[in-house]
Length: 239
Image (tube, rainbow, N blue to C red; front, side, top):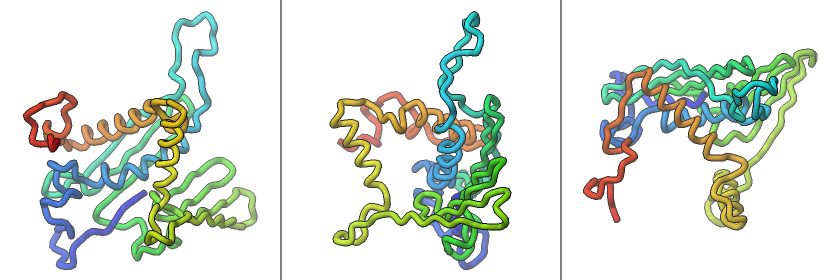
């Protein structure tokens, strides 16, 4: 989950953002899912998609049917909308039939993952398995600790701290994004058009999941910002 309590102090049903703000303005692709929910969905994919065992073909050599290397999930989603038409609450269930696992990604602008901002109050991410679970601290986009709780661990909780390096000379610049920059630099150095760690295919599947969630939730963005056809007269062209 990655959610922020953005209710205003007047408690009149409105959020702290103006209607023109990018967080709630559909002309700017506003809404909880595309801004916050992607981080919750990333944890689902890191665990249940990215780590899937590769399978290039079916177990029967006589079969002409070939499986993709990884299985995309089926999607069941629900949304509630803000008065601007953007989503303010979204829940997505991702089902991976081949491996018989499910992941749930949630996001909201009405309630917070951590009610008072404490990163240790409640886990943002729970990775549950038959032998226990891993609880990752809030926030989902930049956690600095996680807990390991084993099924037969006698109540023991192992806490692992993983502080993110910062550049103290530049006001703690970085926030972990330098790892993305490093991977991009390695790809450029090695002449690769895509990352082996995060290939295009995985990014596309994640975007397709969000597209399907938006479709099921009844949220549609203007053609101006969603079309993949170049329009030389578009007002989005700034060059």
